[in-house]
Figure (cartoon, rainbow, N blue to C red):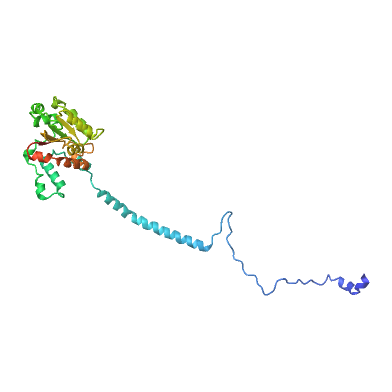
Length: 293
């Protein structure tokens, strides 16, 4: 095998003295570009692009500006709320509790009637609502109980009670604002009524037909009730004004909210409608006297 290679194999075999030249694998012209250092990531942290960072900064600045504006506007809003609270209307209870109670007078009832009918009636018709002082009994000066007041304005009650024989009518009609007040006033009549029959007239648990039967069966001397039910009985002619001589309005009484009967809109409307069912005409003719208790 050595013969086949020739003599040159022996001469080329020992090249230990000749330095070996390494071939460059990369081209000489290409230079290594400097590598930019990037911040090291923490474990579990996502790298946020620069564009999103700028957006976040802009939104933070905007939110700070908005909160600053709101903080500047807040005192104005609070002052507006305080103004609204100051402008809040006073209720009837607030007005009446702060003022001293004043007894009712005939002028109060006449002005109430004219104010209610002013938009629906002519000037001539409004004159028919005028009630002279002779139509009224002496008014309660807030010192009387119901029995003491009636003894003063009805001194001949025992005689009038015996003379009354008509059915579906009463001699004395007392008008108040509620069913509870009706029961209370009936209890106060004990020392005044004597042998007189008293009937309560209100809508709570009592039908109109039942009250019409009670009025038509026997003689009733005194009736105490609410304006709404009395008005309904007058309209249906279950109660008439033929034998009526005294109409007493529970004018000065105040409920828990310091409201009088005419301070409650529904009761006031029923009262004025009731007065228009022949009662004003009977007062003008001198048949009925009005008392403000």
